Image 1: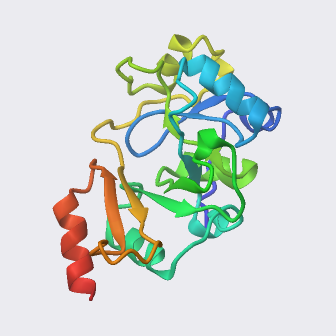
Image 2: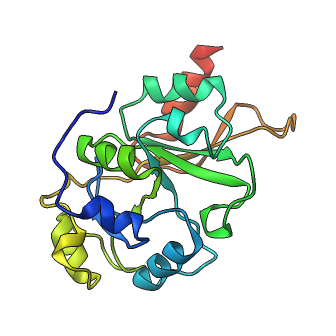
Image 3: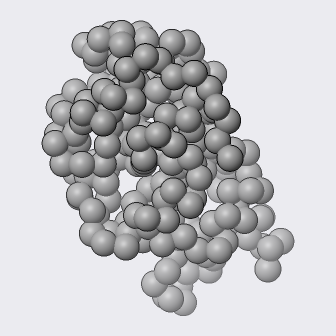
Length: 205
């Protein structure tokens, strides 16, 4: 169940209009928009991000993500074991999505911050890319991040994030390729080390 928290006035309406917002995560501010073509156009232009670099989606739980991607049983196990928000899972899409979301393989992050979870519980999944121009160092304060991106203050949550390493990005191996020696492969190491994931998988079996 999502904790009830107070959201900034008008921020849900802004999202539903297809406009980007800056919201907090357990690491750094995220730039969020609906996973729709026009909204993604605005986000990528705002970040000056190459269209061949995908963005992840933030959700309040895997049940919310199940409308978009296949959820293997092991996904719940691995998220329950590691700290909340520390993993982003690349999972197969039910139907091919916008290429900027990964097309047939979509990166899903179950958000840990109560404010972010409340937001996506009302809007549906939102992009969870870092709230900074591509190539620039991210900042920890959501309103400062919005200002750098030339967004109005009404587009951001107040307050800072704790910072630190990004979530670890892992992909579920579904190909049946015998060269894959585990269910998951690490794409980007972050809060959780590769060795920790391999140890968990080994102990699980």
